[in-house]
Length: 177
Ligand code: FES
Ligand code: FES
Image (cartoon, rainbow, N blue to C red; front, side, top):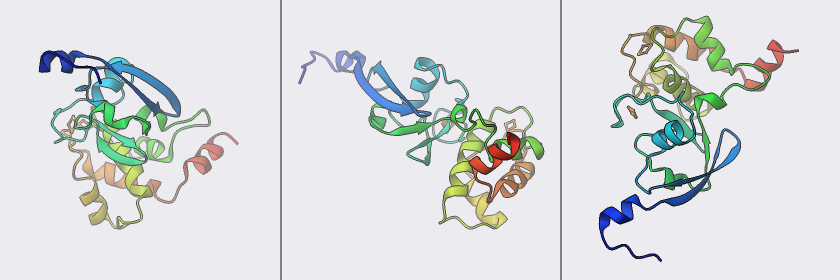
């Protein structure tokens, strides 16, 4: 193992991380203290994931790691070695929008749009999670980590409930028969 003369030298030293992002294998040479959010935005150019508070308080940076919604501002990129990361750019496919994206459009579930990628990533994860109830109160509770400064909560809830039960492939096939 390489030895460093100062702690600062160890932090600045780059390490290689391999992860799968939106289905593609990506290799990054990054210092070990780089969080996943910065790796995605600054190293991979995936700026759909937003930096709001940078402290785990707002949910703007939500992505999926192995299908689970996580705050990417709180997760070191090196901890994602070998894992599957999905960002908002990975929700749609060539066949069309993900049902949650379509529902946000149809329900007018945003104003400025800054929180929207994080809202969508939390929403897609919760709709796949059988432990979370299907009533409005359960959805509100599950989405409570995603703050919307514009107060679009009512329409966000309507969008999530209207996307319930629609699989991405079925939605995409109906748009592109
Ligand atoms: S930017 Fe990560 S929770 Fe706010
Ligand atoms: S739409 Fe503006 S912060 Fe949510």
